[in-house]
Length: 574
Image 1: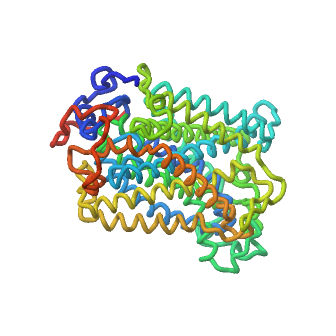
Image 2: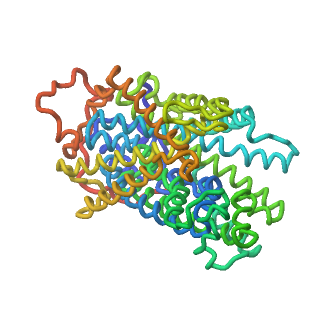
Image 3: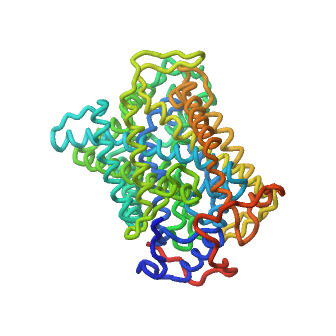
């Protein structure tokens, strides 16, 4: 294993060594030595989380679905995932403050419940991250094709499989190189991405307002006939019921509000992580919600035309149709902003995923762990994990070539014709995230019941159990709403392809179980369940007759005691 030098003494970015010493001591108390460079401040950490969540990417991808299912009034459904995920962020923030370790959900679950439980959480979460990178990077192709046509006269077919492949691979190559060159570079890309998101949300709203809205504020409380099949923009039938429409339309914003947990994935590169990571998580959800609401409202009020006909045109043309009323130069500028938003989003997700793979491998939990866990001595990044993740993402992208022309039937399951296998795999992106989130919140609940008391800089105190219950309830109900198979002709099939999402979840679980029970990666993980600060939830339920570990932890015993006082000085931001 290649170890990076102690960043507290070699990196000039450490303006407050006390914070670094405190963070590294806490890491040592959990059985790990610092290998990654602690160079990110609050804003950089927040930027990674915020650009992963990315209101621009989410809205530009899903606006037409929300509008086509719930009409303009779907905007108010944003509050459901915003509030729900804010409770989840509070639970994760408490865990991140107590366990400021790279790998986030995997580490939180492992310490809270046990090696096997944590391993499966990491397995589902890791696949969801890699799949999401593929989804985001392929999503940029249509905007890239439009911009190159306007600038260079190219006529790229955004639906052509080879076009999707080469554009995505080129984008992924750039992202991988930038992520390899250091956490500071990843942070700078994400920080610039935040400014782009500001322009792409608040800026577009202002531009559209100056150009002139076509509707008054009351328009946002109407459905414009979208609850009836005869006037629905997607030809869906909700039988006149707003509640039935809202139950599905809410999935459009649900698919936006996650990614804030990536602030925890880069904890070992964040200064004063126990304090700043929880703040970054909450801020990402709050500002992501504000940005999404502002942009969505502006787009809705700028829809040309009245009634169901206007909505139908907007559903058919999506966000580009609404922006087409702006001058050509402004449209090109916005296209550029959109492309960079997708780019920074994918870069942040890839960076978070590589830290999970590094964290996993450091616990000897993956095949080739000794290679994957290596940290580049010059750049201080898990280069091999980044390369491996990029290769897997490319393999996922190749699934665009698997696209049956007609429906394929197997028992009670129908695979829809004309849908490529990547789209089917991407359906696991959100369901896998929600499953991982739910399992992690359950782990926090179990740890509390076993007597674990959070002792980080951020705790929920006496509200902890209530907040955890609310987070579990939200995640559980919304996961069911996401995956529930109700037929290919049902509105929900736009999101889960009927049984396909559940089938993908089942396949990933079976492959994980096959590897788990054949290779037993939990044996390595068991060496990393101890916390000098207090017994972890996993330790509190350790079987009395379990034999002692037959080998020492991969990174050796702890070398420092955790401090008992808060570090002096104010947080330093990048």
